[in-house]
Image 1: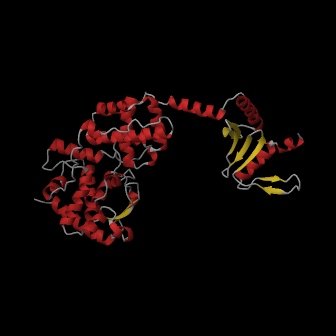
Image 2: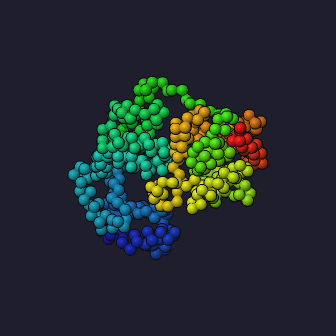
Length: 422
């Protein structure tokens, strides 16, 4: 009996072990025979007797575990963390669980079943909240926006339903009720697949209800993908003289003259623009690597006009909506859809002799027109911040700044001529 008592854990001993690890040291114990101080390895596990075990990780996490056998097989039940559960409380819980085991119970299995029952009560709305926090925040900005729209649609129609009760018919009904375009419906289905894949990963469901659903069977064959267009010289003349708000016209001119993504201009700040050296430094993002964009004479003028129009903001294109400013806590860029909406409104209201286009078509216009001006293909790709293909793209890390500056200068002069056409 004396030997068993000596093997029992002690409160001060546990405290010293945890404190040692928190301070970056090794826990120690004293050899009862030689009184020598011995360093203990991490992670460590020390028995308190009758299966109750104290574990301590290298990160300093201490946990109580009850080890026992059920049906001839070893089992483990996590009681809880130390010091949330002290030594006396852990021993009391262990005695109670051992009594259950003696009566033929299996507390580890019971705990797992109780957890599964709790999960079965999850609603789709709760799942969406969990997915946003754990998965969506790690995706690219454009994916977050696309998935975010679809998650709102899923929540509006399925939010109150229990996750475990969702069937393939519910997903089909969701797609049909939303009645979106083929592309948006495809995004809705993809989002639902990812959402319920997350549910399967959490063991809320055994089978993803989206499995086997084909959009072609629901909506027919995908319509032809819209090809990017190149605005002609006459269309560029009309666009460069468009009757829009000055900020919108200038933004479109900068997008044309620099061939950057609209998102890069929307996030642009004054600190990124170096007028002394005529360089715009775009930081890297999830949509592409960072780059230094040469600022040509016309682009410099357009930038300076934008800054004069928005003297009170750090952003080149600050928001004009009080609600958005309040949501961001003050200074904020324009909404990502502002430029596209301005283009659409101009075309619908003024009926200009210009084909319908999007902000991204400005990049394809710059690329195609620069090629028509004799700019080599690899330089146009570099101007658009595209990675070169093949072996050259792997080994060629030269930024081609001077070459890109020459190309954008030639392109900028062409835009000025288009604007001044009689």
